[in-house]
Image (cartoon, rainbow, N blue to C red; front, side):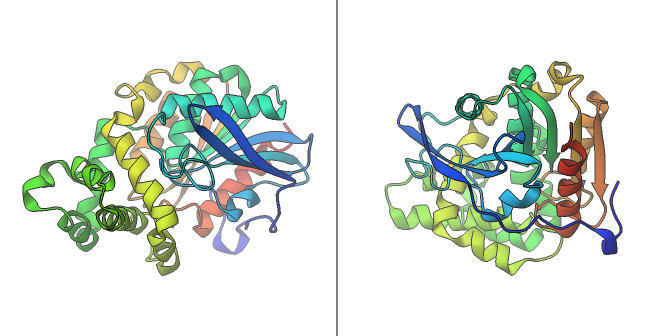
Length: 321
């Protein structure tokens, strides 16, 4: 289900948080959060991508503010959360439990779980651990963190489509170390030399930015180069890739029975180079309650017009449940 280009929905108007602050979740981590919409309306939580990304003002605008009460937060080490770019005590299941702490802080019995890319991975992990706390699931750009998906992005696959960008990304590493690019980048991202860290973070982040959109987007790439975003994104992302995202192989598909009965909508770009559509299709087959909406003129980014349309329609579809 996708709308014609002249009927597409756009984001809701700009909105400021009615509450913001930091939540101490222990182990030295403090999470920055925002709440937008109408207090007491339908609860939802937004899970940003990465790992190591962060939220932005545009993310607040994917829900009808009159009908939703939305919590957004920067995950451990990201955005305004503290410490900056921290990779210690930072893993999938700690973040899943952070989401629960935030739900309890808000006083919600259950809420809608919304995530894109790595946020989709996290949404599935959370919902499978806490199905009783999940009313609906909205996903974009499904990433199931399986070996074939990790290999597609950092070994062979996306490299065949974005050939010149891959040469820039892989060329940052000496040929003798290219057998494991993720490890080679991680070694540089954790170097004591700031210049080495920043150069590696820029290349890693630009590669991810280049595979994010159907058409080149210089504004997005400039944003990805910003050290305030590139450093936590690259460091945390590389660590999670090396640790297989703290998941067993195909765990999120294996445990999909835990979310049977929970309604969902998957919005997937047909030409997504970052998270190929096969993962969304396999998830849909395993989780028949979910609707899968392909956007035929979009890639991966949440900012592409067809993806925006799908996500806004998805939150509207669940608004009165």
